[in-house]
Length: 273
Image 1 (cartoon, helix red, strand yellow):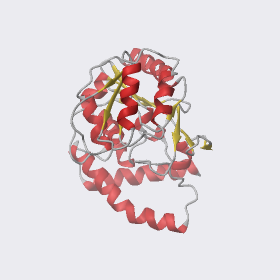
Image 2 (cartoon, one colour; image 1 turned 90 degrees about the horizontal axis):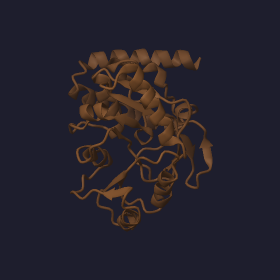
Image 3 (cartoon, helix red, strand yellow; image 1 turned 180 degrees about the vertical axis):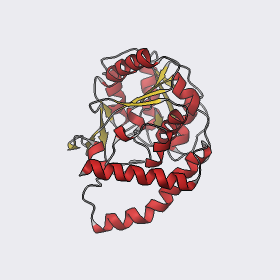
Image 4 (cartoon, helix red, strand yellow; image 1 turned 120 degrees about the horizontal axis):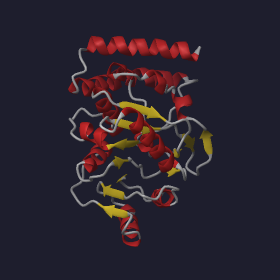
């Protein structure tokens, strides 16, 4: 778990971890220099649940994605999960994804990078449901991602839903300055090395929208005029940054990126129709 000024919702999130049906886990937390009560809260949990919660003590990373990826270098385990500070995990999240992981490892072999991930239930700050599916309102289609080439369609995983094995960690724990977000980097690295991105059928968590999210849920189905303008203004910069990250993984030319991004847009239009 990467934390930064998250005292408002942090306790509710950690409590949802402590309520998981699967109990064989350990929570590692690195705080990125909070100036509210965040560190006091995680210290209290670390003292109360010393066998389940550990605070990692090393310098601030100054951004969310570096905070998350830096922890991969500090922790050794067979499996890993990224955890945001302001959401709520449904009770069977870990159990559901762990069963899916074991099934895939039995089918595909254990020496293959594998990421299990899921859809999210979008809620307001009080956890009232706004949408039963982030994928539906954000236009995310995991079934279109089959290879590294398809990563031009941008990423399809939300890091806060993931469970991934040590092989996925080993190909993604070393990163460049062009990373856009930790989950995007994880997905691209896994596909670059012939791994598997496997979606589960149902959402595993409540994705809280509260106005301070690093990345939030955006409904792209019926954009307003203002949203259309803002989308065009930000599209170039977002695609440039995404391509630069892929280029660091030897994706290929910008023309290849544009080609595969176009192909995926056509596939999406076909599915929407």
